[in-house]
Image (cartoon, rainbow, N blue to C red; front, side, top):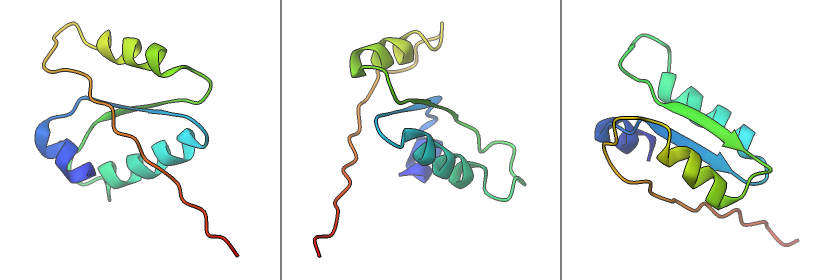
Length: 82
């Protein structure tokens, strides 16, 4: 997914919900890699205590040069039952 974001020229990935800061950190590491390619850059933000509507509004106002629409991608965490 991260490589698709880079290939598609995604400018911002905003995370929302429980543990979103941890997910943001993981995505940041995947984007930057070993740091040798300065073209691997996407702004990431996390919004643990904000509503989806507020984060979408933030994303829509992120750039004064609108290149595309805001897309919502939902990730689900499944816990194992013992």
